[in-house]
Amino acid sequence: MTTITRFAPSPTGRLHVGNIRTALHNWMLAQKAGGRFMLRIDDTDAERSREEYVEAIREDLAWLGLHPDGEERQSARLSLYDEAFERLKDAGRVYPAYETQQELELKRKVQLGRGLPPIYDRAALALSEDDRAANEAAGEMPHWRFRLDHDEPITWEDGVRGAQKFDAAQLSDPVIRRADGSWLYMLPSCVDDIDMGITDVLRGEDHVSNTAVQVQMFTALGAQPPRFAHEALLVGREGKLSKRLGSLGCDAFRERGIEPEALIALLARLGTSLPVEPIAHRDTLVGTFDLSTFGRAPAKFDDAELDRVNTAIVHQLDYADVADRLPHGMYDAAWHAIRPNLETVGGAREWWAIVQGPVTPPEMNGDTRAYLAEAASTLEWSATPWQDLTATLKAQTGRKGKDLFLPLRQALTGQNHGPDMGELLPLIGEKEARKRLQNAASS
Ligand code: GLU
Image (cartoon, rainbow, N blue to C red):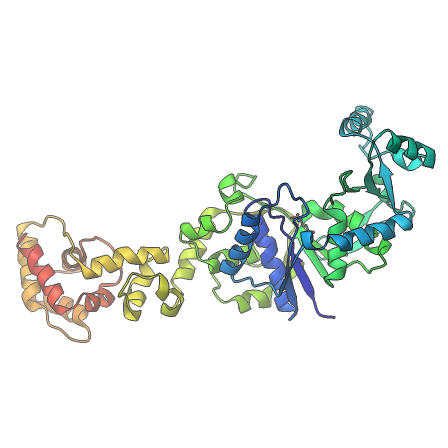
């Protein structure tokens, strides 16, 4: 059977890094099995769902290179939910309930006060036809609950957590539909997973108790439940994910100069027993993807670690990967010369400006100026002008180390540090280099 996974965000905000990780892992699971990865937009909440977020989710997935093999939207599938709802109602697995929020809240408080778990008491299940008719005659419209089967323990083999077992009697019958007919998450998700042929549901461990309910729902709908796996949540260095990482979509990363490959390399392995490495090739990451390496402890997302992975990824990018983001005129050899010195691709702009000049060297003393004048007249152009120049100057002046190299670097770039001068000098060119040495010598 072809593996089919899905990423099912609610378009009520931008993706956060936890969502991105879930999307990535679903994509990887499908890739590894040669299967399909679907996007499902969970937009049954008409009030909170926004079109701009749907767009942003698509754009973020595109930027990450996680291309879905298909997309479904829950708002376009309401008739499927109606149909499933009627079937469950006919089978006695759905019942109307009339309690108000306040009544339910009060029941919960009383239970908690007595030291009992706040499980719904099924009072509505005990209502007679007459009670229901009386409620409705009084204008009280019901919401609807799914009746859990208390007879059988709920079990599944979780891809991350191992064997899971729940006692249905310890769970509340979930509300699946509101009095106004609108849907809560639980049933539409099952209906879609069945209809879309989803074989693997991989999501955060905050969904474990939903899974317990959904296992019974799949069965009640006459379907085999998919395989489930729940990954430990992602937390920030100090515990909760900060708002900054929390809900800004991929823009925040892109604007900071983070490459999609860096985010992917980090999130692919964070929280697993595999080492986080700056692996720019997705096939490598996909090849090592394995749910059995996932740990149970929360995975810690550290911005500094992302920056480190990013820098190492930038150093591997080829000219073709970045050409459209480089300053005008910057060519292949220039990128390769400058690349080892960058933390972000955007940093190339600064070094390209230095290659093109003008540059402002620091104040030099008399000795150094004389040395630079000698350098200007010594400079000869060859395939290796920097190596030749420094070798000759070393022999002529007896200078070495910093005394030999630093004044030249300062005169040629205006900087104390930077890319390998052997790579940089050919980019600056003979005429310009001589001019810079002369300028610094006479400043
Ligand atoms: N829309 C749900 C969420 O974002 C989907 C959960 C699921 O994967 O089933 O939490």
